[in-house]
Image (cartoon, rainbow, N blue to C red; front, side):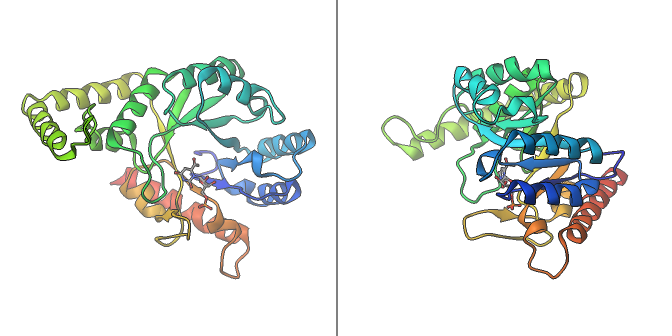
Length: 290
Ligand code: 6AU
């Protein structure tokens, strides 16, 4: 990122190998990461992977397979290592949901660590009305910090300190009790949070986490749902601007797909990528200067 002065990740969600390689070669000089959904290719081959690896070296970007693993440890080991795609053999980065519990990280790490790979955890999503709760996000952050020898960051909508702060009041109990009595449970939860705040437990929690981050590890936040204007698509994707994401919310990398390769304007993808690159990097410089 520093070398190329870019915090732009291209989400290359095209379906033909030749189109992906052409776009990767054109936009490669302006990005730090190229993200794929390998299972959406109609003509996957090992030759495609070889060419992509060559472009990754030529333009100095990392390859991120957006696999969003979400199964038990034993299954993800095979999905990551084997099958047609053999993701671990070429993807520097992949990502996973934490829904199945920490075994998913242990399983992926057993394959990826020895290959020098890294994992991102989905702590938040960009889509409207998603089911990520504060507690889920908080527990995902905890899992990441506990596994910082393999997990190096998050897919999220805000920086790690903001994630910790915004979820510090999350209670481990659900808002709906076993009888479906939402309000009673909510009331108990409210008192619990109040008491917790009163005895400064949440503050201690935050300080402990910040200590862990400063001393132990540093996590990157890669953020999808980015376009030059605020908006969305017809299927619930929500777009925010590079300034909002990088400067205001403290994220590190903008992930941009259709904003670059299916732009409505007359401009070529490379010209639009340069606009995103400048917007993302300037927002980062503004943040660290303030
Ligand atoms: O810029 P877009 O909307 O064309 O593409 C956004 C890309 C897609 C999504 O699968 C992915 O980012 N994504 C993710 C990732 C990267 O995990 C998470 C999320 O919350 N939202 C999202 O759009 O390839």
